Image (cartoon, rainbow, N blue to C red; front, side, top):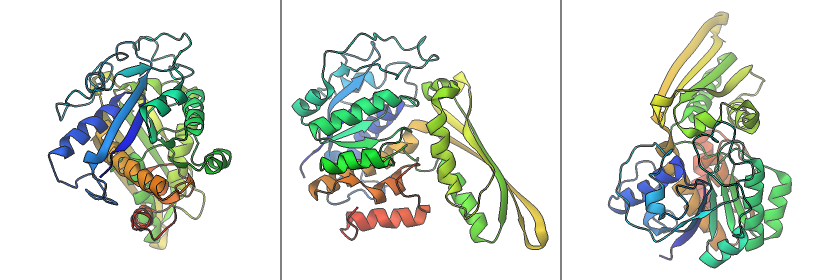
Length: 354
């Protein structure tokens, strides 16, 4: 099988989990965490990284296999990663560093000589994977435009609305390029669990009155999200995913709640739901979820990369609805999880155009 050539913007915990996970699955035929080990004849071993961009001075110039373990990255280690021969390159800072990250991420905000579009062309990237921090709106637009210029597909794993925005959809459609996103959804994360609980309650005839979701963690993602102004799209992404499960408005509060440094890459989520069933009798659901955050989405991204490659090979352009609904919190079309999964599989099998 021909390799799927991928570029990465942002070498943080999620990139670390993805790269370690690919190394792990090279030696394991397990399907745990993947929709299938092989989809469209593409296995995890067929994914090849061809370039990587970051603003952290301690990561720039290092082999990608080393950079994924450089602080402040703090997710767990499951694999030794062989030298990859890919040197992390300096990226434009733009709005990628918030006020809480400035003290722990060494960076130089001088203009970057390196043209991202030119570099995507020279390294042969077919797909650019966006792993920038929450709130990096201008930087995400920069990378999306670089994809348009270099004719590279775009997978947007963070909550800036590209795949779900009609103007960006048209730009990628006009260039004949596929786009998937926005804001990656974990294998079993807070949003998946919350959506499922709301849908279950409604399907069983419960009138859901109100619900909330609170999250704490100890990585740079949670530190960055202490800056409320960077959270507008993140809150909308998570909230719209849950509200889409109900045929009526539900008072909802969702979002990152606090940073607890000693949790490292562990994430703890609290979900609460209040409703009424037969006889107007009250019922409450109180759930707690504890995960290693970065690895929770790595398998989903492997599926998204492989499905986007299938779209490229079929010359499908514009928003990839089935992939986005299955893999992301804020897709162009919100679907219940079981429906999204079936549509993803139907797309892979050629039964759906997108």
